[in-house]
Amino acid sequence: MSCYQYKNLEPIIDAEVDKIAEWIIQKRREVHAHPELAHEEANTSKLVAEALREAGWEVHESLAGFGLLGTLKGELDSSEVPSTKCVAFRADMDALPINELTGAAYASTIPGKMHACGHDNHIAMALGIARVMAKLRKKWSGTIKLVFEPAEETGEGADMMIDAGVLDSPRVDVMITLAISPGTEEGHFRLIEGTSMPRVDRFRIEVEGEASHGGEPHHGIDAVLLGCELTVALQRVASREIPASDPVILNIIHIEGGQLDGTIPSTASLTGMLRSFSGASRDKAFQSIDKIVQGIAASYGGRASIFIEPESEYPMGYHDPAVTRLVAEAAIDVVGPDRVSIENRPDWGGDSFARYTQLVPGTFVFFGVRNEAQGKTYPVHHPKFDVDDSVLPIAVKVGCRAALRALV
Image (cartoon, rainbow, N blue to C red):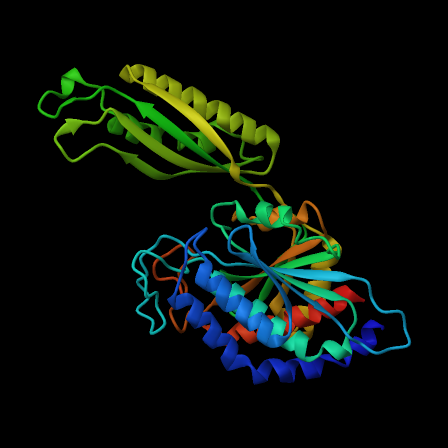
């Protein structure tokens, strides 16, 4: 079937999406109110599986823990040779350990857990695509997969889903993820060709000092104080140790140590993340980290060890130019050329979606949700992050169009 013939389906797609717009919003809010952290996504997975089965999808559950795969084959009755192509959409499912402060009616009902990275929206958009494409299954040919990934925030889920075989039987030809972007104007689509996101390495620094009574700190080596000095000193890695032409971003994201019993702490642990776009800058950064850590620890009379955690890293992202343009064309059909941009400037975020695009051509779609009028401008991972979910059906329309284009 030609792209022109599929073009005739697009008004039908729009009408079907409009019919379920409120359902898409309701699903997003239902997931948002009941967030589950990485490796805990049992109820979220159940909700997704039920919605997929109701729409007529084949569902494979308990992949990589609570991950699942939905598969739908088109049933076009045509004299032409059916499409053997397969397009997949990834939607991540896990929430973050953040106490929500939005005050929304659909805010998290679980203290200390929040969908602060928009995965509730990603689930709702994917389920919207599922319902529409199932309703129209007799009008297209090929296979669509929906990959619902657990444990994205810990960097583990993508590898586990790939190991579970989600890219095979049939082999995925094109992979797409629709992701909300609070830094992009509401209703706009931003795409990146080529190198798109940095490699992200998580690391730990274990500090050892010497315990002593709080009234006699001179007899001990304060591991927490040592850790605090390391936190400050390591900021010079990005600004003074690495050339600006090949930058890195280094953040210490967690510090733990000490007890509340009047004792000078003997141990402390720091967790950090390093983002880089080249092996040279990454290697240089870790050499500098080691030099600074060992030097400061020795000056205190303490010890420190650095551990890089390979299981939690995100590889550098790459977006296939042809797939990127395909999705951009679909978006232009929905919102017009003024609301769609293709950039060659990488984003610093980092995402496990890069695992899939190491193996199959794909692209990451930034869907804008920034709304100044409603005050919905907070970044992801912020306790007040929220979106105007009335725009989610726009992304569903784009996703359905992109699926059809990918199957031609």
